[in-house]
Image 1 (cartoon, rainbow, N blue to C red):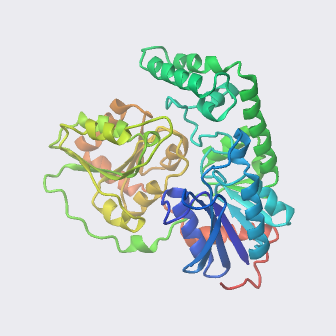
Image 2 (spheres, rainbow, N blue to C red):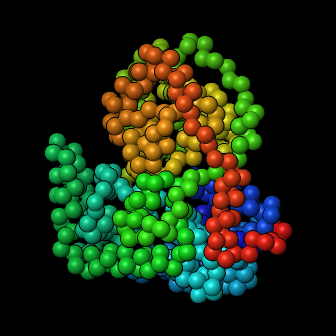
Image 3 (cartoon, one colour):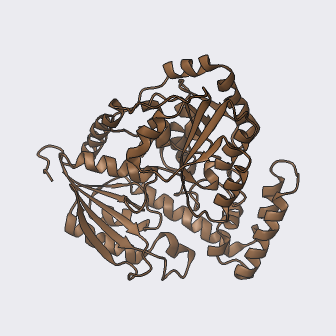
Length: 457
């Protein structure tokens, strides 16, 4: 079988969850099939839409450059017809039996059309909410959750990209006003309504949002099958308009081998609870919530290692600086170095509990599964796919975005070490990459891909 994976970025350019999963699955499939990866890079020194390729182990990797140099409309940000044509050329050369999409942000929604026009089977793994949320995480610019958004809410979030009266100057002023408003102690929900109000009458901008929604739903109709790692994510896409019968709920698979030889970690000499955070330092991950919670704990009884690195985040500046300021006067908070995926078993071996404090509806964080593989319980925000992962045991939840709630959960573990032992005994099983591969191959076969007599790449 000839399989093409399509994703917005790929290692070594980025190593977030969807990219790591895509690489692991592609390499596993390449043991029996011919596998290629098509992804986007952003190099301002190279021409827009320039295509390059290389052989990376068993994978043929094709990259297309896109820096949004020719964008003249909001539609250009997601359709990008020139990029779709490059993708079509790639399909004609590689001739896959199935195209497995993971993300089309920064690429083109038209890539799905290119595959279907050639009669190629299309699978799409859903990793976040980008298909119906232009910002991808269902978080407004003020970092409040977007549970039931209106078109005006979407306009407010991406106003810089839309035909808004008064242009960027007016939008900047409205954003600044909304930021000041956010500091007022108003009842829940009032901030959002007031901040969105100025955009409610932007007819042209609202029309652009509606056009995007209609276009994406049309794109979804051309996908043969979707895969959602959690039921929570599946249900949100059903609400959006994707037929439920098209969505297979199937969590990620993992290579179990690195976890069979977990390194031995030295115990904390003082007997303190060892908490860890692994991931990027961006506002949606709630790292500030974790640091605020830890500031109120006794430094003699708990310690926190914060592994990872900071990334830019639209609408928020100076986040890393604010984190380091929060850690001032908190000797039990230790910032660690950036790490590679292969370091994860070693880092988790030195932890008693992993904390995943995301304020957005995380889908199925890889770090939660990795903690389970390492024998480490988790504390997660009590919503979205995270809460679903610990429903059967192995972890505790707290009120999302609430540092005091998180602090109380941490204090429970500090005071009752027997609770930690019980959580370890309840850790759920993690699906192997081998089982995941087999399940996905069966899905390909269901759509008519030629599994029998597969090509060996």
